[in-house]
Image (cartoon, rainbow, N blue to C red):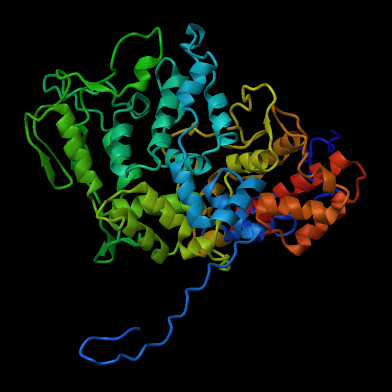
Length: 570
C-alpha cells in the first residue's frame, strides 16, 4: 500500500508539524515532546486515575408490581469501551457480541472458554524444543504475540497480562537453559489460573522454576552456622511486598492504616528472615537437560537443603520438623489470610484493567468480593474480575479528570491488530521484542527488566499536574520524549504493513473515500468513539489531503493512535 512519508517524527531533528498532525507539545513524565493532536498534554495529565385468605376473609389485592425496567441497550461505543478494559483490543464481532449478550453475559461466556492452546504447546508445535534452542530465547516472543493478538480467549489474555505485571517474572532474569520454555511455563500458570482462586495461583507461582530462578530461591539452602550463611530472602520479601500484602497496613478500601499519624508497616526484617527459612530446599524436578520438560513441572524439595527448624513470621509459627511442602502450605495460608491481600491485589487489578486512580469505594467493593464471593469463598478470581468490570465506576461514562489510565504500549499495538484483523504473514508471529523505547514500544510482555515491572503502580511523574493533584500514572514511568517518538514512528511502519503483522484493511476499505465515515469507524474500533470533535476535524482534514485509498486509511489509523483520546483509556 502507499505509505506516509517516513519517519513521521525524526528523533534527531527538530519537530516539524506534518499536515496530518497538529504540532502540540505533550508533557510526558516531566519532559516535553511534540507529537499528536491538540490536547495531549491535558489528556496525559488527567490519566492516572390475589387471592382469598381462609376464614371467609377476602383480601384486597395490592398494587400491581411495576416490572423491572429492561437494561438499557448497549451502544457500540459503550461496548468498545468495555472491551478496551476487558481484552487486548476490540473487534467488530466482539462489539456486536457484547451488545447482544450484555456485559455480564459476555463475561460469563469468556469464563467458560477453554484455552485453545498453551504457550508451551505452541512452542513445541513450532519445533522450538530442538536442541539448538537449549541456550537461547528463540520462540518466546513469537508465542506471546500469537496469543495476545490472535487468541480468542481475550478476557483471559487481558487478566493474564495484568497478573504478569503484578507477579512479575522477566525472561532476561531467568538464569536457566531453555529459557523460552521456562518462561512460557510461568505465563501458562498465570493464564490457566486467571479465572481460578488466588490462593492456588500463588502456590503454583511459588513452585514454578522460572520464578525460583528469577527471585533466586531455586536451590536456596538452610542456614549454616559453620559458615554464617543464611537463606536467600528475595522471594520471601517480594512475595509480601509486591505480590500479596504490600509495605503498609491497609483498610479494605485501600487507604493506609496509621498510628499516631504514621503508616503501620505490614512486616519487619525479622518476618522476611523467618519466611525465607520456609523457601529452602526447592530444586528442579529432574536433571535431564536434553529436553525442556522439567521446567514445566513444579519444583520439589531436597530435604537435606530445607530448614527443619521452627520459623516465625507475620505472627504465625511453622513448628520444627514440618516437611517442606507443609511449611510452604502454612506460610501461604498465613499470607493469603492477611487482611491486606484483598485491597492490595484488587486495587492493582483495577489499575491494570480500568483506571489508575480508583476511588476508595471502588477498591472497597472489589476487595469485599475478594474476601468473600458471596458464598464464603476468599480469593475467587472470577468474582473479583466481574466486580471490577461491572462496577459503576467502570461502566459509567467517565467525567472526572482522574478517570482512566494511559493505554499500555503493547495494548496499543494489539488494539490495532485486533481491530483490523491483522495476522502474521509468516505464520510465526515474528513481531519480536518490543522493549526498546527508541524505535519500538518501550514495553514487551514477559520482558520486564526487574521484579518491579516496567512501571510501578504508585508511580507519579514529578513536577506535573498529576503530582500536584495527588494522583498516580504508572505507565508514564516509561513515557518520555524518546519513547513517544519511537512509538509513533514504529506504529507508522506497523500501520503501513511494514512488519510481519499485516492486514488488507478490507473491513474499512469500502468507506475510505468518505472521510467522515472512515474516521468514525476507526474512532469506534480503536478509541471507543471518544475522539473529540476537534480531533476528528483535524484527522478528517489530513485524510482529505490524500486521494489514495490506502494512504487515507493509514492517515486515519495512525493519527487516531497518536491522539490523546486514544492514548488515554477512559
